[in-house]
Length: 309
Ligand code: HPA
Image 1 (tube, rainbow, N blue to C red):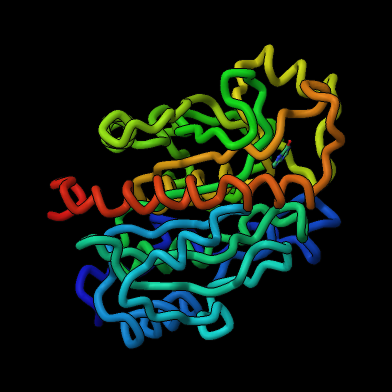
Image 2 (cartoon, protein in one colour; image 1 turned 60 degrees about the vertical axis):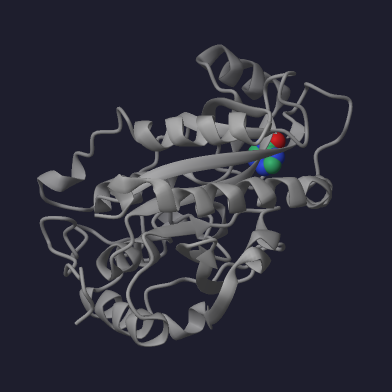
């Protein structure tokens, strides 16, 4: 058995969903949780392929894929070899796990995330995140592309996610049982690691914005009226991911950090039409800058004592 391995327990997350939907998209219920067997087999495969778990895993969102090329001594495994991982069908994402190091910090990079808008199931990343936790990972760094609601964070800007708004009010934990499902979300984005990232940005002379990320289901972009409402609610950036994974990660007892790369001004805030290819184009244009900050951040985590005990 791998070091640090904790079996996925019913207390941490009941394996049996109360009333699994036949097809999640039809009912807005989540698909059945990945089985304990799928998670156990996944952890064995991870251990066999890569050895003991790195402390840090990164979920690479749109525009962040080039960061996987910065991994040194990289070994790669397709999600198809990992029974608890779901492949994604979204352009700009590759469904593969890359494990290696950045500086002296070992890291696992998830090349794709399953989005809720693909199937209607918002727990598509449950198996992957629970497997990483069982393997021994301690921190999930989430990255995404987002629309900006703030003129001081134009396209190309980076935003540290300090909090989120779940505008969909959907939860990947619907159907779970036990008290562990009542997750405290009051400091979902790790306060110690937020400070660490802020200090690093100062040291590296990088303009790092910060703010609240709002999850809109998509896949359609928002209307200008929705964006006006979200701004009044206190949102600084809007996107179609990250929030369900943060909920799943906190439920699993993983620490979380999040970074948004602004790819456009949100609907109604600029004259430009919103398209997926335009957001990918902008993401590619600023992707190298984002990937460099991410690389610096991951390497610097080698100095964070609380991740290494
Ligand atoms: N809205 C939602 N998701 C997004 C956007 C946006 O404007 N840009 C990139 N992802």
